[in-house]
Image 1 (cartoon, rainbow, N blue to C red):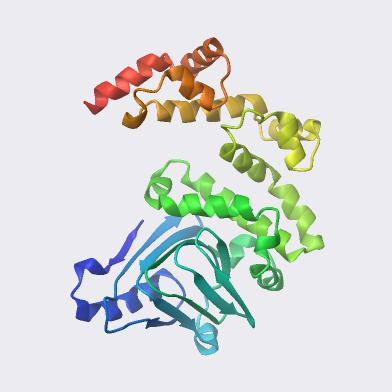
Image 2: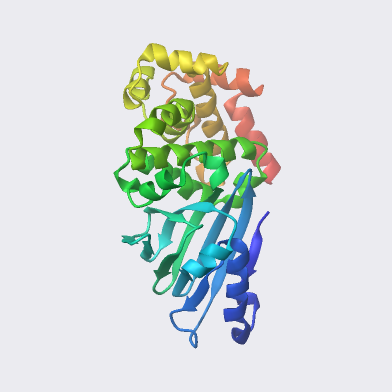
Length: 320
């Protein structure tokens, strides 16, 4: 579950101590140094369990998190954090290397080691924290990958995924499918790290094991693309169309039916949105890849037991 700290509920004199205590719980033990400890210090932190990992979101005034070698030696909980910067540039120094991470970019932090992370002014980040034992990768592979992730072809895919996870952690963790989301997220993180580390011995195995996860993540982010064909999906992932079909068949899935179901879910959700109530149903369906209105209506009714217009009306009635 979720809420850790919101300093807006606290007197100003108590905020520095409260932020330090919350950081000890939410992430790795470290020294918490404020850019202006006598100024308007504020922070909001949340932690949400996601299967065998957790989602941590943090927004605050200028801050520096300094984890010394001594603190690292005292901590017996090895964890890796994949963090997307949301506000302000993040600055990380670890294992003798430095990187500046602007908003919208991903950084990987080995929370089991010493590090120096900071931002200036009002900043924010959201991260997925994964115990090492869930990754099944040697420590040297993870550490080698940490500063090379931007060079991986999986970088944008995983960055977008982490950004979505941390944008609505409450909704995702409360969903019945959260365990599946957790497993897929760990798979994607593992594949990114192996790709970034260019570890041939692990790469082939991990890429094979995570191919279905990567394909499904890719498709979900491109459902509105009219050129999302089996051939296009296969080409992006370096497999043949035959291999793609076999991949889904081995998971007891039909590729075409799964894509249609995903698109139907998007249309169904959009039809419930008040700000879309004046958009024609055909236009919404077309935007999600349905080119034949009759075919779409038939598919929708077969899936949900009502027509799209009936679903829109019932949703509007429920709101009113």
